Amino acid sequence: MYRTEDIVAEYGVTKEDLNRFIKSCSPSVINDDGKISEKTFQLVLQFIEDKKDRIGEKLKGEVAKYKIGDKKVVIFQDDAISFLEKIPSNSVDIITTDPAYSGMNNKLNLGKGRIVGKYSEKGKKNGKWFSEFEDSEENYTRFLSECKRVLKTSTGHIYIMFDSFSLLSLGNIVRNFFDVKNLITWDKVNIGMGHYFRRRHEYIIFATNGNNRKLRNRKFPDVWRFKRVHNPAYPTQKPVEVFQAMIHASAEDDFTVCDPFLGSGSSAIAAIKNNCNFIGCDISDKSIELSTCRIEEFLKNSKDILQKKSMAVEKNIFWE
Image (spheres, rainbow, N blue to C red):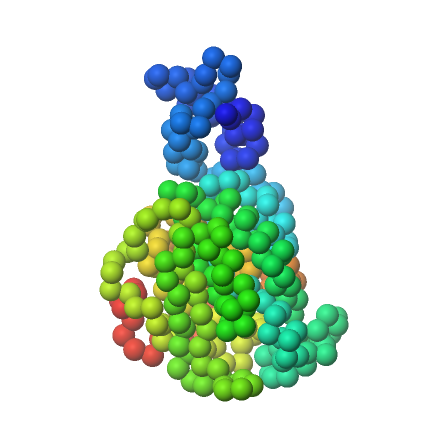
């Protein structure tokens, strides 16, 4: 049974709007005890998911907010899990994210290259190494649990990026929360650094939140060929095209895309290009500074200051 005050608190809909909807229902969705049953709650849930701007009403303290026509782009500075905990339930259509996992680096003490600096600098104020998401099973379970809660049950798609180590150590946990549909390989085309075979690819788990909503069409492959970004302004910056492929395949008009590990803001640029609403966060000062400047310049002049050219190596079947 559901109480109206609990629905207001969890789903971010106003009490006035909820009561107005309940009164309009015939037959009534309210039982004799003043509560909403599990069966009739599905009608209420559909009303809730169709309600606009529930996230904006509940979340305060945004770092930057932009409006493009009737679409919104909002950036917050927060820890990923703390950020997700503040978002209303069933309010996000798509999650596309690239967590900064610590597993492989902690095991092998990697990170001596141009991008992230020396691993010994991790945590130091002036070091290049950035804050990572500690990938314990407990942490990751909390993260996935919140992702499931905020994703809509009717439309929710989720894309999570992994390196080979985190895929083996954490990828299986995704099945505890979502219906895993496929494992996508991102082929970076040019060989990279690596120990015990040099790396040229990363992985993306694609899953749905208990629904069978289809992709835009059936022609998309499960191997994506986009070059990596060389000499990036932000560690582990991903090409916009990787996020464009995710969003274009899953997005519909007026969808809301969420990225709890914003990084350089590539996912935000991709969401704008796909005419979607976007909400993202990162705990890093540098991330917030770079991503807000990047979004502002893109909206003003249609120029991407962190990625000057397309990373696609062939005709792109995703959006051309």
